[in-house]
Length: 112
Image 1: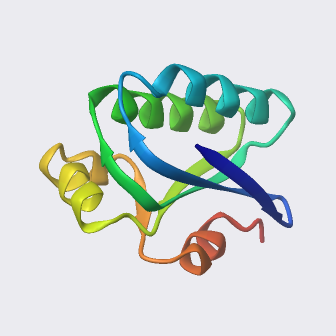
Image 2: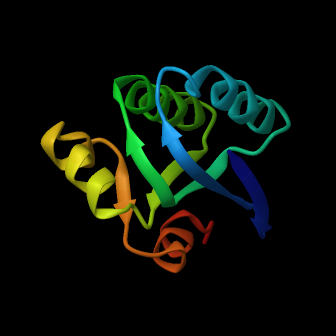
């Protein structure tokens, strides 16, 4: 469901498949382990995510809140048209930073 790689202090998390009520608990655990290990600057690459449901959206919001409370941040990158549409319809694109590419997200999250 996820793979990670580092870009300096930023952890890029590539997600795949459907993120729904069935998969969210294990994803939550994996993301919590990253955050607990000190990875507080995260980019969630959504280029291979087919669909997200309300449990996934809640997970994204909680993850952003937690990381920001610890002086970190989270950005979403490369959403598929379906996922982008869901973010727009729910207006979460106003709360979550969404970028067309990993490079743009890295530029936003990189410490100056």
